[in-house]
Image (cartoon, rainbow, N blue to C red; front, side, top):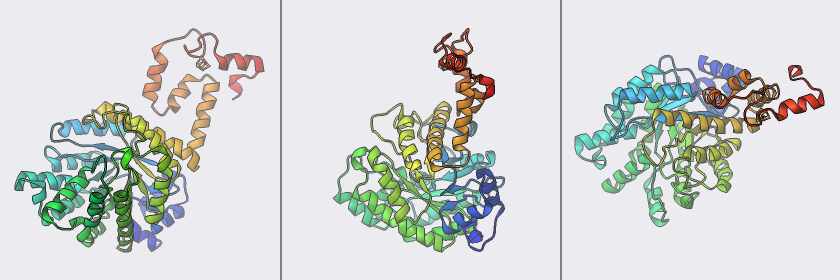
Length: 431
Ligand code: SF4
């Protein structure tokens, strides 16, 4: 049985109990969230040793790190290094988006090396194999696509991004509504190319029941991808994006009816003032399905700093109900990330998630900040470094320039914290 089926029958699974323990919630609260689809626990029955990660309403906002080779760079060793960077920066999940080298071997190495939840986009492997075997992505046989999905499910992939909402109707909407950046999703581009060349419906939409059968068997959570997500501020919240979302909303209901866990992916590039409306729209159209946002990046000009642009958008999205943030690295739009980019991307995204959790009222979020503030008032440097989101960078910053005072070298001997404590007669040790 899937987590969803168990929850509907009132069966409290070990995974639900573990998620509840980690979140500091009553297990029944997690069970009811899984049962109504507002929470998913992606945990493939074949992923041995996976530490269950709950994603959805009432839970801590989760962070995903994308790793994976491209056709130009990367091999198993470099992807393992990126995986270690993501784990040490405390990403909640990873997605292996490999499109180069031995894709199956890399995925199996990732799944076998981590207890984190692992996601993939099966269409990438299917598309690359179609190029190698048949000369082009558009020559991909439908049977081959489903064979890859089956293979990845058997390997233990916990969740799969599937661009089922890119339909002929959405494609025709795209043609009628010119964009600045037509399609920026690789999965969306592969799918549209295949559909237009073959003059057929998207097989992931047409044979959605077949996809559900595989997902049901292995308890793979479907992450309904937004192949028509806006890739520039100019295209945000346009008709093709909303057309796709409407279809995704219907597929959420079909997934749940089949007992398959499902979440929904969202934009993309988006001006600040459209983010809240997009979150509300997803929650309404997709009946409270967990929302997994890819940024959103709040400006198109941040190359080199797009992790910051995404963190700004991610914090707003999550504060208003998005449940899961896909990281963006400093190398976004520029190149395949290095392990250090992975680390920075995860940290920036965790910062956004935590900022949102403070206003969501997630247990322990505000308390963490209070502890840091008290440590700051006490000039307790060891504790400040321990509590920092990135203790390694905090320690480095502290060591950069020493001071003769008990504060830091910013104000030197004239540390405001120390001076005011003296004048007010408060002792830091009383805190
Ligand atoms: S020296 Fe200035 S910046 Fe440093 S801890 Fe004291 S008040 Fe803060």
